[in-house]
Amino acid sequence: MVEKYIQALKKLALSDEINLGGADTVLGMLYECYNENHPYDNEEIKADFNELYHQMNGMPLREMDKVIYPVCKLCRDHEKAGFTEGIKIGIRIANELV
Image 1 (tube, rainbow, N blue to C red):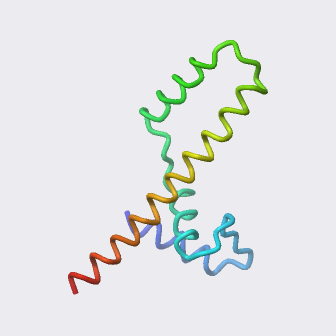
Image 2: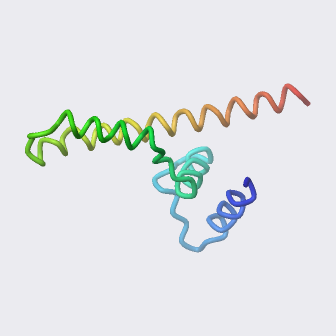
């Protein structure tokens, strides 16, 4: 499973057209690569978004967009923070075990 991500990182690193997805750090690049290769729309997330849409029933589309776009950005920022902190903790644990 990890091999898939390593191959994707190698492909990205050797590419002439490197697109870091706006990342400015190695951890940011790792997150972008992981996110691109690991869909995260599980059933719970889909159900939560359906509930959000249900609560906005009757709102004009433009008003819904004003809610949905910041919610999606918040979710992505939260996921990225959790991913990068998880990597940092994993590195600390590996260092302590050695």
